[in-house]
Amino acid sequence: MIKEKLLYLQTFGCQMNVSDSEKIAGLLKNIGYRPTNDSSLADLIILNTCSVRARAEEKVYNHLVQYKGLKRKRPKILIGVGGCVAQQEGERLLLNIPHLDFVFGTHNLHLLPELVLSAEKGERQAETDFIDNDSRLDLFPVDNSTNGVSRFVTVMQGCDNFCSYCIVPYVRGREISRRSADILEEISQLAAKGVKEVTLLGQNVNSYGLKSDGELDFVTLLRQVSEIPGIERLRFTTSHPKDFSRQLIDCFAEMPKLCKHVHLPAQAGSNAVLSAMNRGYSREEYLSLIGQLKTVSPGIQITGDIIVGFPGETETDFQETLSLLEEVRYTDVFSFIYSKRPETKAAGYTDHISQKEKQMRLDRLLAMQRKITLENNRSFEGSVQEVLVEGESRRGGQIYGRISGNRIVNITADPALVGQMVRVTITRGEQNSLQGELCN
Ligand code: SAH
Ligand code: SF4
Ligand code: F3S
Image (tube, rainbow, N blue to C red; front, side, top):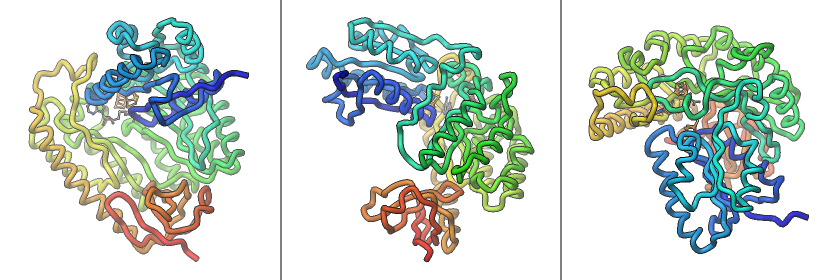
């Protein structure tokens, strides 16, 4: 029998990294590692990292510094770095951080067991090669060990859009789609284990299948997933506005299982900034898309991402972003201060905005969106919603789940309902969530 060892896995960044971490835990289970929440007990520490903004990257280095002391006390502990910082830095991480044992990039999850076994023997290695489309099966190791009623399923990774601010195309590589048959098979297996909701995941899901011969396109994939028995709800993220087709819009009218929520990042509200960002759509095109979605699916919830303080953004440009929030009336917005990233086109721009001004713009945007979010949450009061119950709330005595529109609802009810679809009357809309009561 293999001796059980403890893995402390820290995840930074987006849902893609969260999903990769599940796969990492699954792969390492096969070589005897069990997860722990206590880094001081771990035999192996892995940081699955994000480099989308400078702050995200600094966090990783701060944690690594912290583990230096741990390694001094327990020299046998192994430390590895994966994800987007690992992809960006590669061998340099091993050179700069003597207490680091191994590095693996975003295309190398499948090599991890080997890397760990070599590290156990004292070998220090970095694996950060990108793989090509032909070997793409290796990119998507499946892990079905995690429980839960709602799961993310990776359908593609990488991005070919090269928005001028964004490091993702450099750290995740070119768009590579997973085989449709494998996706459908994985979801069928999840449904057989009791999963009722799946979210199809990729940096840019609308481009799914377009660059691999013989694969389904995204809309056909969605339709086939919705026919899998047991799957009651379907979502997808993230979409790019420039690739959101009319057929995909119509899915919201035609597919009852497709949830009434779209995450559709606008990034900015002014055409000058959108163009400098290389987003490939105008404010008018974006608003037309939102209008069409709201027409085919009344009540659809829209969330988005916004960057403030992009180089050259004037006060007038910024006011156009504020007015975009008003026009779209987003359910929620993830807003970020522009951060200069290596290799990106915008890193070469000269007209940077001061940190103070960027912070002021972010504060103004947050204040406006908080108001819209609260008003929107209150608009649900008195309505009856289908809620898929996902777990017990941190507030004691309550369970929580999400409505089709992806808002969280807390309900005072029996924890035995976890995993079930229930009907709920919304009693109160709060800033970050809804309160509800079970319908009789
Ligand atoms: N299409 C992607 C977006 C990934 S990055 C997806 O799959 O979700 C998530 C968000 O980070 C972007 O939408 C953008 O708003 C923000 N972001 C990316 N690069 C940034 C930068 N250099 N500075 C600030 N925010 C950035
Ligand atoms: Fe980055 Fe743009 Fe690709 Fe999204 S679409 S990952 S923002 S380059
Ligand atoms: Fe970060 Fe990489 Fe995701 S840079 S946002 S973890 S794709």
